[in-house]
Structure formats: C-alpha cells, structure tokens
Image (tube, rainbow, N blue to C red):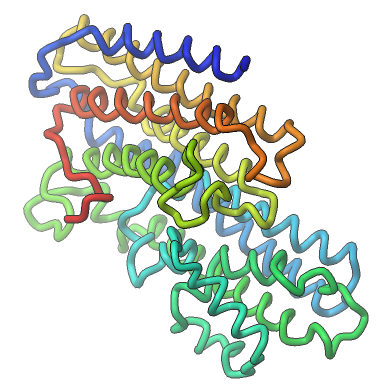
Length: 373
C-alpha cells in the first residue's frame, strides 16, 4: 500500500501545479535551434552510439557462444541481449528520422503484437529450420515480425531454449545460426541509424538547418515539435501497449504480461524508457529555456516540468517495488495496486508535459500518433 500512498501524493502535487493557468503566447524567447543541437549532440547521438555498441556486444557474444557452447557463454549472450534491450529503452522514444527509414524502427522492435505473430513465425522457423532464412541478404528483407529484439528474445529465452547450451551442436545448430543472423542484422540496423544521425551529409543536415530548401523541416519550431510529440507519443504507447492495465486487459493482447516478460528484462526496459524521457528533457535543454519572454511564465513552466520529472521518478520507484517483489517472475500474480502505482504517475506526466512543453515552445497542438494521421 505504500506504493499507492506515495503516488497519491504525487497526484495532488500534479493537480496543484496544473491549477496554475497562463496565456500561452508565442514563445519568442524559446531557442529552437539550441534545443535541436543539444538534443542531437547530448542525447540522440550518445544514446544511439550506446545502442549500436550494445548490439555489437550482443553479436560478438552470440558468435563466441556459438563457436564454443557453454552455460557461461550462453549467460554472457543473454546478458548482452538484456543490455541491448535496456539501451533501446533509453532511445526508443525518438521515433522519427533515420529510425523509421526503411522500417528500421519496426525491425528493431515489432510491437504491439496482439496476434503474437512474432512468436508464431519465429517458432515456425525453429521447427522447420530453413537454412535460407539464415542468410544475411534474406534476413535483411525478412518480415519485421521475424527480426529484432523480440525475435531474439524467443530464440534466447523461448520454448526450446533450455538446452541451448547443449554440447550436441547438431541439436542446437539452427538456433545458434538464427541467433547470430538476427543479432548481426540488429547491429547493422542500429549502426545505420547512428551513422545517419552523425553524418553531416545525411539526416543531421536536415535536423540542424531548417529552411525553405529543407525537405523535412521548414521552420526551426518543427524540430522542437518532433521532440515534444515524441515525448508524448512514448508515454501514450507505454500506457497503451507496454504497461499492463490494472484489469489485465491490456491492448497489447498479452493481458498482464508486459513486453520482454519472457527474458525477465521487462521492468528494466520500462525503467530505461522513463530514464530516456527524463534525459530528453534535461539533455535537450527544455529545462533551460524561457517561455513567452516572461520571467513569470518561465518560472511557471519550470515548476511544471519539475513535476513531470517527479512523476517519472515515482513511476520508476513503483517499478522498483515490483522488481523487488516475489511476483517479478510471474507478472500475473502482481497485485493490481502495484500496476496502478506505475500507470498513474505516467498518466500524470503525460498530461502535464503535453500542455507545458507546447506552451513553453509556443507550439500548437499536434496529432496523437496513436490516432493515426
């Protein structure tokens, strides 16, 4: 019950902050170019570099394990997988630009998956063992449901993985081949996204130089709009697809089983996602900007954003309590109140952040990506 009490306190704080109203005029003092640059240099590039590095470690660990099967080697490969998942959690909110080119985002994480397509298709590969599916050129053009982190989770932690470290290489030959092919493809996708963000002649050029001759961003405010929309969209998706609903009827089709439950990294992934959103606000410079040229408005915005950060931390604390509970290994036994203590502060953060960030930057309300375009 302690988890519920501290979240209720956060809710009262949020209500008090939300009760303060101001006229959200054009934010002339907001420096869109600074936010674009800082978000790129201090958040996007560093986070994608970490993700690319983690996926390289995963591919290397998988290759080493497959060359010499052992329980220790399997444990190292599984640990590297978890590291890649956590790294993706910290940057998965940047759902635009290089991340969505050529379906890269879905190739990294095909989710939601209410019909369990990944489980079915990857399971079929492991049963029928078509060698052609292991060739890099075929993996590169394979269905998004059969590649990426969730496909790898099934290979490493799904049915049949208990004897993955068997000395009988013939028995696990295909599983190893699929794990290696998928991990190498995942690293390639991560590396290409990172390169597109860091190369001055690629997406970085569009991001940093809005203008009439820019095919993506005509005005500096449009890059800020992309970041603000990404922040809200990630919270919306967490509530809709990632965090189990209190009644066990989550729209992801998995009931009370959150994403990455089979590998035991679900709580870490959700916590990393919240970490990434907090980092975007801090490293992107949103906490340092002025609002509509008024010192009073700026102070009000900063107070509201601090409430958002507090709510994100309350949600992480609630996740920590779940991680410490005996039910961590079986999410269906986690009390409803514990999931409520995660969802409520996330909902609060979403509502306050959406209004506040748009007012701070002088943005009009954009569409909700979950509603379609």
